[in-house]
Image (cartoon, rainbow, N blue to C red):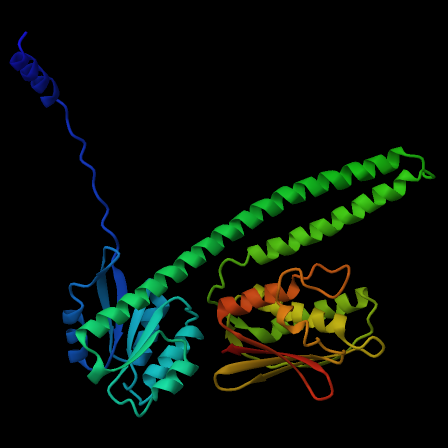
Length: 384
């Protein structure tokens, strides 16, 4: 057989094979919301950014012509990555109101906001950048094609990174839940065998005190696991309308029972109001409950007093929780929301960490301060 014949045979051998066709999934485009009352601005923006792409993904535009309309779009469309937002629309500050409400009422901390204005005097740049959580601020007269492209690229990169951080947080929470489950199984086994061994021994045996210590420490470890599970399980701070009056009454009743279990004869001063907030009832109760329990434990040793005061205005619900203890020292203040930080020997130290997680998840405002007479106040502000 000649080389030519061999080549021909090989060629015929492989011509009968079918080549598998693989479909390449197209990358989803970045969704960008244009909010402006001038149709020409929408057309110009789409023309300038028509060929724009970032990380191989094109841009898909959504248009809105009023601030009110844009908030409805953002509540429904959770894949909006960037908002190109005009300042002056139905009112002279409509865009500023939208930017503020995106973080509070819509509760979206991921979408990136680029403000654009044709009347910079109404919204001075320094004031806007300082007070609002936005990515960029441009006067329309200065916004060239290159600057718009650069600004959008920066915003999308920031949005991408925030989403990656959130995905990592969710993965870490799932890992924590799995680890907590495994530890809980082991602690139950340890406690069970320690109790079994105690029953098998003579009651005068010195070994019993060691077994009691094992059971006690195993129980404390279970408390730690439960607290970590509570923290990790807060995966979604979902939107939900909740009337707070009855929820607060339930929490106050639970905290009064808690105070009694701690042998604390606390004088409670309760002032409640009706209001509907955006938040899951169980998470709202968790926040108030942990803050009230903290106030009970750290109120004055001899005449403990705890005050819960609720005030409501046209847009916000203000909740203040006050105790008459010695207060948190300046040295401890930076660490009060850290996991496992506590000044009580037998406590886990996860209560305020859980509070901080929920508050941040909803973009509520939580502040701590001391009065002139050293009373401790936690102030919680929630949009209604």
